[in-house]
Each structure stands twice: as C-alpha cells, then as structure tokens.
Image 1 (cartoon, rainbow, N blue to C red):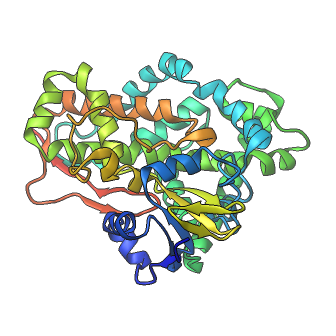
Image 2: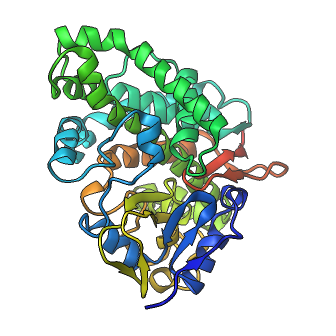
Length: 397
C-alpha cells in the first residue's frame, strides 16, 4: 500500500485560474491524492473515475459537509443513492426523457436562438456569453421545465450566485452568505407559482416535482427544492459554457470551423462532444469514501470527501492519447465523462445537447464569417464550474 500524497502547495487560485496542469500532475504523480485547499481527495484517471461513479458502495453520494447540500438547503438527486435518488429523479424524467426532449425542445430552443440573435446580429462583434450562450441556456431551460415569468437577468444571476456556494469547497464565508441569500430569494419568488400549481397541476416538470411530494406546501418545497435548484445550476452551466467552449475550440482552427460549416449535419454533434470533453463544464462528481477503498494503491480514509475529477478523466492520455489537451474535432469517437457515469448520469443531458447543437448551428448560419476577436482573447475561469467568462467574436455584419 502506498502512502497518501498530499498536494498542499495547490491553492484555490491555482484551480480557479486553470485546473488542468494540476490534474495532469495528479495523473502523473498521484492519481488519488489529497488537496487540503479544498478538503477533497482527487481521483483523476479515467478508469478510476468511471469505476467510482458506477459503484455507490465504494463511493456513496452522501458527502459529509457537501457544499451542494449546504447551499441548496438539503440533499438533492445528486447526493442520495438508491430508492431516494430514484424517487427524486422520476418526476424529472417525465419531461427530460431523451425521446420527449427531441420531440418538444428543438423548436423552443431554435426560436429563442433567433430572438437573441436578432438583437445583435447586425453589430459585427459581441461577447457571446452574456449576449447569447447564457441567455439561451436559462430561457430555454425555464420554458421546457415550466418556470414562469423569470427574466434572463434574474436567471443568470441566480446561477452565478448559487454556483459560488455549491463550489465552495474551501468554505469561504463571503461566498456562502451570497449564495444563502439567493437560495432564500428563489424560494420566495417561486412560492406563488407553486401555490398555483398545487391547486392546478399543469404537467410541467416543476409541477410534477411538486406533486411527487406529500404534505403542505412548505413540506413539499423542503423535499424537492434542493433538486430543482440543482437543475438551475446544471441547466445553465453545461449547455451555456459547453457551447461557449465549443465555439472557442472551433474558432481556434480555421480548418475545423470550415469543416463544420460545410457539413453541419455530420459534424455539429462531434464538435459539441469534443468541446465538452476538451473543457468540461462540470468539475467533479462529489462522493464519500466507503469502507476499505483503495485507488491506485492508496487507501482513502472511510468517510473522506472525494472528487471524481471529470475534466481530468476527459484529458487522460491513456484514453485520449498525446493530444488530449487539444481541441480536435476529428479525434476517434469515444464516450466522454462530461455528463457523468452510473446512476447519477445527468438527467438533463439530452436537453443540454439540443441546446448546444442548435445554438452552434444558428451561430454559424446567422453570423457569416464568425471568427475569434483579433484583440480580445477568450477568458476562462473556474474549476468546479468552468467555461468562458468572456467570449468576444467578430463576423461579417
């Protein structure tokens, strides 16, 4: 048995700025290691991440001190296993089942794409994150799942402020204060809608989640709101930042973007899949170490918080080869880890894919000559949630 390796020189700032050099070091030197700055054991190789995600006995979902549970106000579909997870997941699947998403969502997403593009397509340049990617994600999510009367600015702010809490592994008090206030605001703002839906079910995902619980409204909200808030985070992060990342990757290579323009039907799916492999929007699948867990010869203490590091798995050279750090639309097809594995595979994965594929297609169709801005390079940030903070582009207006 090997002695545990502690990377006490890794800081939160290192991870926020660019976690990929840290992950590469972990894979080389200690594929299972402890990082004190975020009080988390990192599991970083593809095979170990997949095995851990698929084994709720060795790696149960209930992590002690989980920033998800702390911020969202209780355990959600992502932090429970077995029957409880199935109970929370079932009312979401009635809306998010892939076949139903493919029937219902594309028209909604395309309409919102065009409404957003109409507001800036004549300008010739824009930061796509606030102008397109994030609004597309939150507005289409809200419409598909049945959230009423919420503007794009409110939905985007909710995401960023909750995300600061759910990624707060370092227990920064200022981040938590902001996140807690936002969570309370969400409860307050959405309560009138729930009161109406309790009396008049409307068949939306939100209504189904409400009616899957029992008791008075407050009891029902305590039961399902952590999962709904989780859906708000993932429902913005994965499609918005996955789309932005894909645009960055494509525009970095004129040959690749030209290929997609010439064959969108054949290549947009591959372009998006490679984008979310290259820079994964979600950083960890959080777990707790079960009894007698050994990873790569290292014993992880029972009960210790564990991060199955999705972005690291998606850059593992043993799977992706020596060009793992590059965006390559033409690399051999292989499943990636962006939506997780096992029982906690993302329930909204098909909606996110529709959002990203449709968004990329409409950008290329509506913004002729779309290219990277010559004077404003993309700016990335984050490790638990990573994507472009700024994505300036130009086109032939």
